[in-house]
Image (cartoon, rainbow, N blue to C red):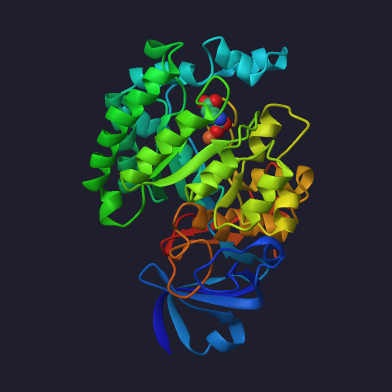
Length: 427
Ligand code: NIG
Ligand code: FE
């Protein structure tokens, strides 16, 4: 018998989300299968998955220093939240009320509220204050099963304030059990000191803020660990047009960053085609993306990251057409977009619940979109997102024997125990 740190014994279902061909996400119709082992066990050694298979095969071979009996429960990979704005100061409950009374998200933004409102609070906050509030959010996300989180800047919008956000993100990665992947979103909105002159601010991002962010990355712990820095832009009315978005992304790519894009949330400017031309890792939102762009997305390796908690929160009737994307053969992921404006939602199970109801994802598709495909969307597909030998032991023990309960019941927490890098966090 081989001794291992942790032995998860005999779960009714081990939902592995292992991709069909190693090193790739699950694409289109492959998303319908989760690669499940019934009555399965998992052995964990030194924070890494050492074995996974039927309990009857593994039981005689591995002896856990700690063993958890998983009968009556299921196991699945820790969720990967591939698009968040987890670091921010303040809150925007007043805008929530304004929207209830009829104002739209873009109207509030055009009137000087929205993102810029959060910029004011974030600039006024210290690194310690931002670390503390974001850490509380990450605790909540982790308890809900999220073990890897992408976090964007974009509420600083000046060189010192964007760098402050990057330092906060780095400290969270150092101190919090969640693994973090950073994204530079200097082109999130036009800050008050550039009001009415998005062109001047675009130049400032390209010539000043981005080079400082890229230099910071080189000496950060992320670069040491080969975790990429992405560059993102909000391509939308009252934010950045297509030409400005292209310049920001190209400058980021020239500086060695990988591209992402907030695109087609309210208006389709042709951003998806441009993002694919630039080899973007992902295109995010895609609420109004047309048929042609969906077809070409399906032929590319760019991942479609859908954020249905936004549509839900903004009370919208229409959602991104995830069904058409999967049917066309695209790689689709889900994320919360956690932020104080469009999506104050820390919960991947809630996002899956919304995707199943309003975008007609099956539970299997929603789970693949929240694990293996989400991991690939942030360059972590070789490290997490599936229960596979050699990957980080980021595993959830679910309350129920049937994983479909994750999106079926909603509003609660389907997670019994979180295992992060092999550590049992809430025994
Ligand atoms: O992804 N759309 C742009 N950015 C965020 C919203 C940020 C905010 O409202 O503070 C989003 O929805
Ligand atoms: Fe976003």
